[in-house]
Amino acid sequence: MAIPLSIFKCIECNEEYDIQQIRYRCNCNDLLEVIHDLNTAIPQPDKWKHSLDDRLDETAFHRYQDILFPSLQEEKIISLKEGDTPLYNVSHAFPAFGSLKLKHEGMNPTLSFKDRGMVAGVSWANHLGCEIVICASTGDTSAAMANYAGAAPNMRGIVLLPFGKISSEQLSQSIVSGALTIGIETDFDGCMKLVQELTEKHN
Ligand SMILES: [Zn+2]
Image (tube, rainbow, N blue to C red):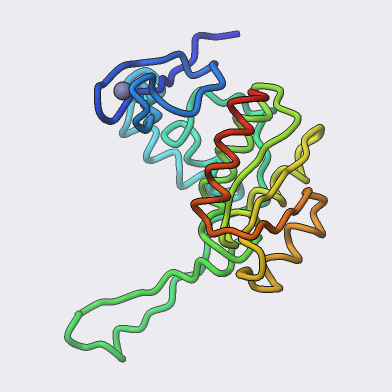
């Protein structure tokens, strides 16, 4: 496989890690950022920018993949046609702002902007050959992860939710898409702690 154009980099100590690792945090325990080598991915930025106009029939993620996640192979992408949500001009209602438009992110496939990140996350998990993905959520993330995992060829989602604190719309999306959906008598932080323990134990 070609050398990846992306690395993990710690937001605190700047330590770098191979992105092919299944890794959740830096050794210093702080968060990791994904950094792409855009100079290599997009050697001719002006040409790339102009080419976007000819690719409007592709999904937003495919169009912008060179800038969003250049290390991802095309055939590993799990897209539900997220993005390209409508813009509504509401300038007339807020004259003090001049030109004002609202982007309706509820028009994404699972009804939230979380789909924009999930296409990258689940596609990369697909690239790594992960058969299980897991998240803690208060609703939108679980709906997105469960749907994208359900669309992948060999993947199942596990969703940990604070019991009784999720809307039926969000809960039904997770269940219908085939994710193992577990309500736990705790809050989001409690669910997240469990996710961290489970992923550490089972990698
Ligand atoms: Zn660090």
